Image (cartoon, rainbow, N blue to C red; front, side, top):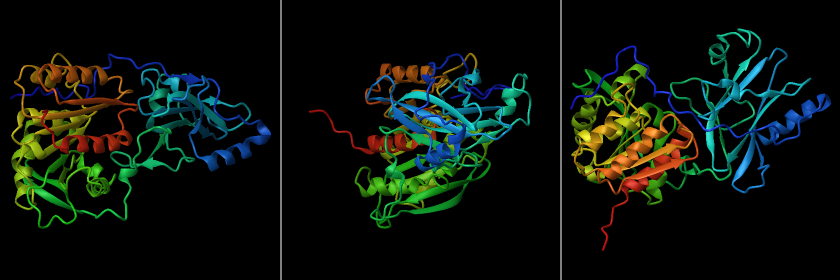
Length: 422
């Protein structure tokens, strides 16, 4: 099967044809704004409570809240932009500008959000040391002035390094407690290896997870999770697997987490890369079988990924169903590639016979660029006979904060044996 390869100068992003829903921005914050004499007391209160601030819905509903982001400016601050993940249109960045309280250092921005929202966010701060706000290059320059929220103690490691990224979780958002290490959960063994690959032209680093007490086990299920260098060293996937296994929500399993190396390599490998999928199925799985007590049953093997990784997980199920019988695709880039062959993988599934593969797909409601293609993939799977395919949308964006809990739910769903109807 030949896959289209975009030219070197092609934009490596989804086409911007859709527009997001307008932000439900509110004029009034959830806190009383200070007069000049009360600024220090105001910031002391914000530091005690942590930010962003959450208050009742001004419309009086039980399922929405008002959320106020705060930034403490300096004397030269000219503008502050706040960008929660996918809440806003990057082509209209002025919609995310904070308001300034005159004669103070208080900047604020309030949204009305459903109370199960969660998301990472950044501030971009103009301290007066760059182009004038009306200059043509101001917005591009401002995107280099990123800051985290100093009044928010909650953060995640940032993809590809740098300062941690702040996040917010509203009261009804799914809990991420499964990611916290627990003293009552037996700890699996994590190790890192250099796996030789002829298909990739050299070694590829891979993290492995072996569940506790598995040294005498055989035929364990297998999870292949892409972007392994983020999921294990940065996010601590082993804690999640330890807890899910301890609670009996998934069976003991072996996890294989290949490294994406860097941005350029990731684009080569995870845009339906034939050589990379051949590495997973024909080199990585046999390498693991020689060292770990893993099954060769595709019905007990899961390939999982996010964004381009979700696209490639689905591609792996399509071209190697004898290896990968379960696909967990989160926010999959099913729009790929740009141009006349857009949504290439969806078209291949539509024209192919139904395969013995289970699909579990999830997307964020704020992923306004990717959602149309995602919903077409959902409908195509249904039309192609994948009645057991799972599809859901969560209240969030293109965000590891959301993908953490979605990954847990997907593993539970795919590794739960399917019972035949009477």
